[in-house]
Length: 313
Image (cartoon, rainbow, N blue to C red; front, side, top):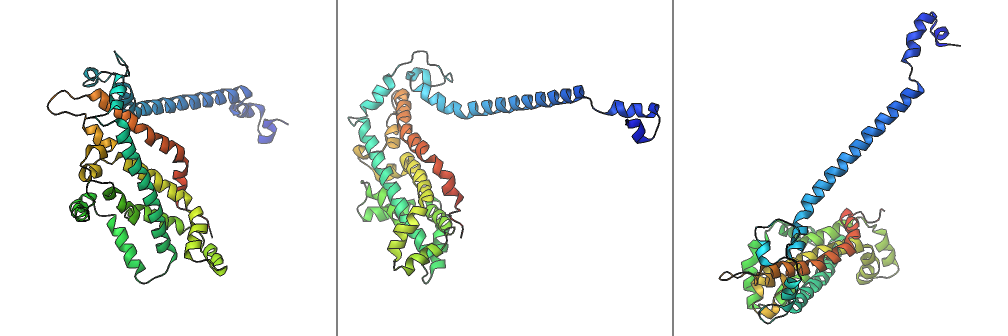
């Protein structure tokens, strides 16, 4: 049976219909055209992404390559490849400033960052458990006050906080930077953990309480293991913020042997003579390495922590 019989017309009328039907060659040609358009689109997409990555990564690449240049090549020079590259800047940075070695500044930054992480994670987890799992009078008011503190700029509290620490004798030591971390003053991380806890079924708590567990046992044995993604997220952001903090150590630390790396970097900028920009960039590169290691080790937990889904009841 031919198409002309199906259409009920003559062979002369069926000829246009046969001509309109795609042949095997037409199908191959259409498939090749589609594959060519797909390859062109993919090539354009990857080329665009390469350009965007080059623009985004150029400042970091310039900083790493400038650490190998002498100071005279750094200012006003946007080239990546050094003309007279050497490791002299790293030797100068590691020798320290004013008789204080680089490792003293590094150790100060490490102490503040590590204890800040411990303080923020522990205190925020305890406060979040109290808001999410314990019923007490005025809880909604305290929760609203805590959320309201996120609206206050840090600069508003600088002066009263400095006066308070001065009266307590905490100026010129690490206590002024670390004690607030153990008092759940980071409201954002408390709120983050509360949202995560709201996704964890209360039946787990109730089952443990039926077995005789108190709040301490429920918190340490059940809540803490499930809260780990949110705690790691808080730890990552706290470590990066504490490691890079410049204003806090500049305000509360007066002795050079207590300075952290961000404050020590400022010492390379001399307002009266030639500043050693090469050593400053080299120290910035050395200061960046721990943050990058910490981020790449724990970054896979970021999505789980921010998702705040927990377990479904």
